[in-house]
Amino acid sequence: MEKTSFESVQEFFDLGLKNYDAITGRFIEMPALGPAREKSEKFMKGFSTFVNLYTAGMDSNSNIQTVLLEAMRRVQEKTGSEMEGDISPETYKDFYRVCIETYSETFKEFMRSGHFASDMGKLNSCLMDFQTYNRGMLEENYLKPMNLPTKTEIDEINKELYSLKKKVKELTSEIKELKERK
Image (cartoon, rainbow, N blue to C red; front, top):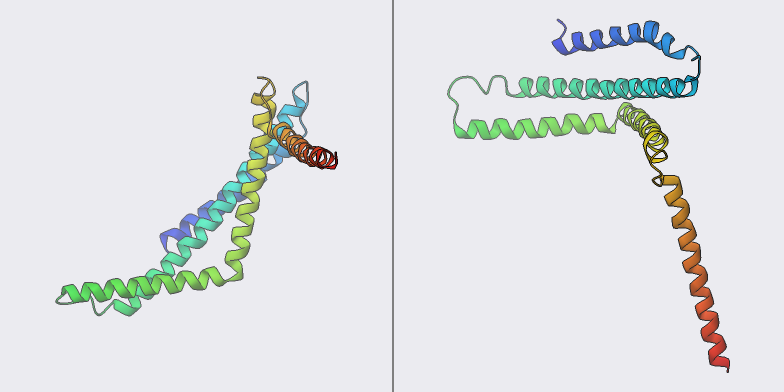
């Protein structure tokens, strides 16, 4: 069976990823030197986090494309001979119904697989790492220098506000009880 163009693209992507690991990956792992060492290390970590997210996204895309190709193949098997000759509106209606059912079943099979769950877990994990990195860099490089509150500071204020409201409520009820006793 000849390779589809998508499989060739996937092989090209995999080859590029191997080259990245061999060349750029080692460069990023080198320790930074000089006065900007800490910022440089953080930047390199962010670049690595982005590459991990991009790789996980490409893997997910690859898997979904594979499922789409499988669904198309199944539709072609089921309707290949029916779409030859005279085509009526009923033929189109049947073709549409077969397409919907076949695509739905193919995607249901894929989504029930353990591979789909692990793939989505990896993608979400990489996305969370990337978001955490970006939030940290945003706070450090933009919010703190402009003297704006960070998420951590806002969370602390909210926690303090909650405990103060709770304490006020307790004291109000105690005052009310004391007034009623008099």
